[in-house]
Image 1 (tube, rainbow, N blue to C red):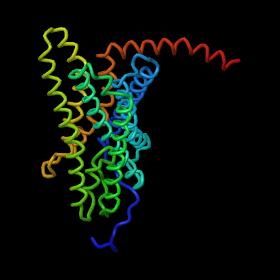
Image 2: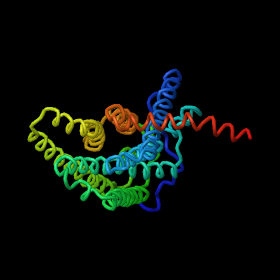
Image 3: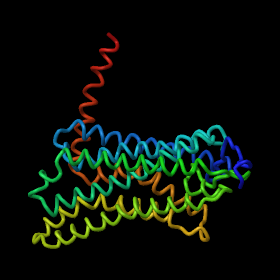
Image 4: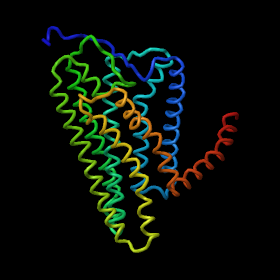
Length: 321
């Protein structure tokens, strides 16, 4: 397409899941419930970690950051979908679509990086327990999180700016419930070779690289666990990793499945289902996985909720006065 013929568009159409009114109401209730559970669950984990000094350790520092990112991650896509269902509209403006793309890419990469950092933390704790406090000091923990944010923000900005230069045809229907990056690129009628090259390069480098790091960390962890003589010691070491490993498996199996599906065999329904798994289900499950299997988190949550119950009547009395 010549520059002079570039199509000026103002909105995209999000096809979502279904057009049936009864199913729309069901989807609204389901996703609203999942959204509230995710926000409240992850927020409780953050507040429990902040309020309990015993949880001011690298592992829980990374977990609180992961919970914060999960709240932002699900807030990037679900509220807009709920508004569209409620207003019976499928429209998303051009500006909102690309804003959604930027923040979606940012938070999905942060999820990826934080899961990698958490696996490194478990590797140091199990394989080098005597040097754990020296290696995982406060400066290194803050640096790892800061670098994750910087890389995620720069890559998201690059991918979004490259997508903004594309021109789009008259068919602007996205077979998804949000502006999924891969689907938006496929709608363009200008040359998308550079966009696809950069997209797969980023997925390979920023997705495959951390995944290789996680695999290496766990191979060393498994090797160290095998050398532990007592069955109780093996169970204790493995239980500290089980929650993290289950989240990693769910996240990578679905996220990488979406981006490495060949265009010829690409199926919009399966793509939407896989996207729901890593954009909605994973953030929903994180609070339950990490709290139900973790005695420290459960203890901190009980302590925080007791404190909140005690403080509530005091606050109400002060307001009345």
